Amino acid sequence: MATKQSAPVRKTKASSARADEAKRLEVLHAYQILDTPPESVFDDLVRLAAFICDTPISFVSLIDEQRQWLKAKVGLPGVYSAPRDLTFCQYTIQSNELYEVEDASIDPLFREHAMVTGDPKIRFYAGYPLITAEGQAVGTICAIDVVPRQLSAAQREALRILGREVVAHLELRRARIQLEEEKTKLEGLLRMTNDAAESLYLNGGQNEIFIKQDHKLVRVKTTDIRYVEALGDYVNIYSGRERYTVYSTMKELEAKLPAREFARVHRKYIVRLDRIIAIESDAVIVEAGRSAELATSLLPVPIGNSYKSALLSRLNLI
Image (cartoon, rainbow, N blue to C red; front, side):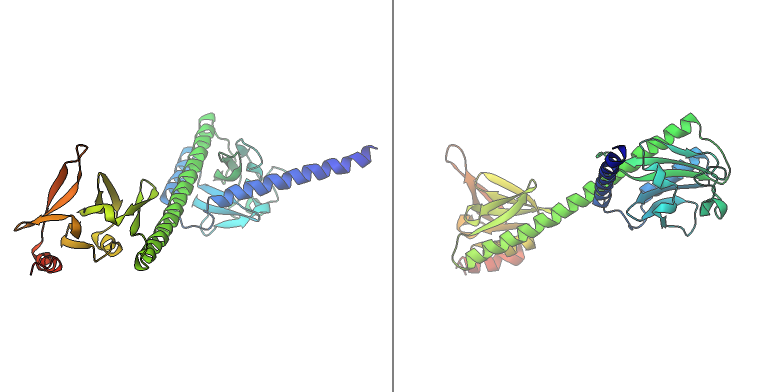
C-alpha cells in the first residue's frame, strides 16, 4: 500500500514545484530587465558588495528558465551568462537566506564544478537571493573569491541589505517602465479622441476637444473657450470659470481649435473671435467669464504686430 500511495505524493510535489517555478518566472519577466544594457545603479551595488566582502568577484544575476544572466558584475571578464544547471546561484534561489560555500574544492556538491577545477578556480561563494514583494527569488547578489574563507556577521548582514537594495531598484525600474507605457497609451487615446472630435466637427457635429488633465482626459467644448495663454512648456485654456493647464504648445493647440472661430493674436495668446468686446491700439478686450454676481469679466490681451492686420481683416475692419 505504501508503494501505491508514494507515486501520487511525488506527483503532487512535482506539480507544485512546477507551479512555483512558473510564478517565479512570471515575476522575473515582468521586470523586463533580461538582456538590457548595463545601468550604473546596479554596477555601483556590485562594486559595493565586492568592497564590503573584500572579494575580487561580485555580481547581480537574474535566473530564467535555462540560464543565469549577469546584470552587473565585478571580475569575470567576458562572462555574461551561464547555463542555469551549472551555477552556484541555482541553489541560492531555493531559500530566503544567505547561501555560503567556504571551500568549493572540498564541497561534495561543487568540487567537480568546471569553474572550481578550471578558471576562475572559485573557492569561496556567498550569495543572497533577490526576494521580490511577491516572495519570489528572481536572482542573486553574490561575492566570490579564489581562496577559501568565511564572511563575518557584519558582511553577511551587508550582503542581505544590498540584496534588498537591488530589489528596490528593480521595483523602481519596473514602475518607471509602467508609467511610460501608461503615458504612451494615454497619449494614443488622446490622439484618437481628438481625431474623433475633429471628425465630428468637420461633419457638422458638436465642436469639442479632449485635453489631458491630472492623468485623465477631459472633454472641453470649444464654444466655452474664451482664450488660450502660453506658459513656458504649458498652455492655459480659459473656459468660463474653469482654467485647464496642459502640457502642449500653442502650435499644437491652434491646430486642434476650429480656425474659423479662433485667431492667434500674439505668440502667447489665442482668442475666440466672438468673445472680443473691443480693440485698442495694442490689445483686444476679451470677455473672460462671468462672476457669481453675473458681472462680465473683461481681460486685455496683447496684440502682436505681426498678427494685427490678419485679425482686423478677419473682423472685417479693414
